Image 1 (cartoon, rainbow, N blue to C red):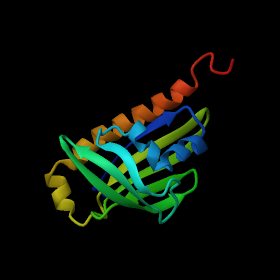
Image 2 (cartoon, rainbow, N blue to C red):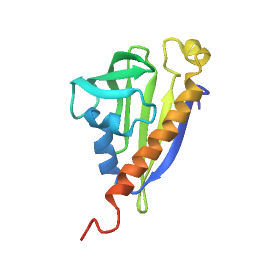
Image 3 (cartoon, rainbow, N blue to C red):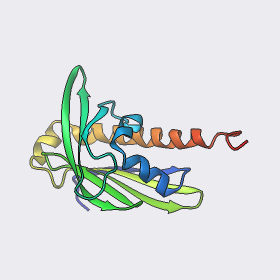
Image 4 (cartoon, rainbow, N blue to C red):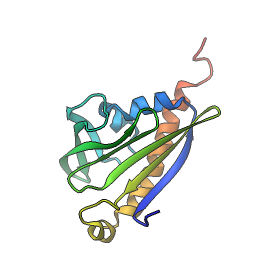
Length: 152
């Protein structure tokens, strides 16, 4: 395993297909983004699959910017990863387990054009915090849909 990856795994109380459907829809990414940078989706695919291109409106502190990405890894209900011009990847792997699924999010800069820049800028450490927050938000989203009394 490359030392140019950071990841975390979290149990989500939902079927893998439901979690994957959320990840596959870029218009929903701001709902679970733990970095606070994803603002909204722009032009592009509404249901991501291998090779799909999509755009996001982003914000780093007070600075808005746009990001275009392409899906570079894909297995329905199991794996999705995208990369932008820098070639580093954001990957989600989903494994069904009893009562739901385990979701692993990874920031992978082993494929990056400038891995040394990513490291010197401190992105791996910051991205690990954002990954943990993202997984917490995903878990909370699905826990809320399973709240007592919802099936009455």
